[in-house]
Image (tube, rainbow, N blue to C red):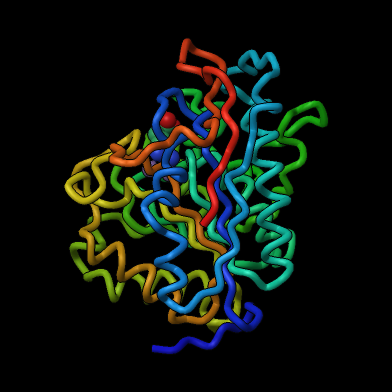
Length: 318
Ligand SMILES: NC(=[NH2+])NCCC[C@H](N)C(=O)O
Ligand SMILES: [Mn+2]
Ligand SMILES: [Mn+2]
């Protein structure tokens, strides 16, 4: 089906924003995800689908990562995560501004603080569809892990007031609880369940996917967040929404996830609305048959996690 694009310029153009970053959680791995996706031929596949592809190389975050970054309260790598997300917000915001589909390749899901901020900077009333095993809506109070990849939604909603001195003071807390909807949830912390309930946030867990089927679930999700089908859509897709038999290579896999087709169906159905302005593909790791020696991924500094060896130049082009 040839979708007409309400918010994109012709010829339809996708800008790939490669974010080799894992500072929002402790494991190395997702900082290689975007590099592997590009090496596996993603840009060429998009071209084969009729898109003009812009990709000038992955984001380089070394300068940001060089700084000392002690925890603030429970939050790990707060300055690093904040600065990286701010850079990504500016990049994604620029693409969305121009009517170019912004496709961000993570990296861990803390990056969505940036990508969604970028989309909201142009479209404050955009609808966010968050496909994930997790709700990623912990606050600095409720988080058990201190990993910021489990928290971006709470920052975007403004569930906690950020003091002026907070590294996250730049995040405009303008996402409304009725403008985000979840699909695929099955590993939600007790504190997060409370937040979802108190804020009336709609979620279609795997239980609803089983009960209604994915076609109905996507319709219901769109009806909730975009009833008149007139608002731009930001799709934030965490690959751990997929069952581990489909996407085993991710940091926090959870049994009982979406099938290959259900994952694809969600993307197809949302694309067919013609309303898509930005997509995040987050938390892929990959066991690589490819060389990833051409980019320096950025990991968190804290908690004894592995860190960059020597910086390498980046030589990746589409
Ligand atoms: N983007 C993700 N994979 N998030 C996993 C979050 C897990 C857990 N809820 C936490 O706060 O740490
Ligand atoms: Mn996530
Ligand atoms: Mn997840």
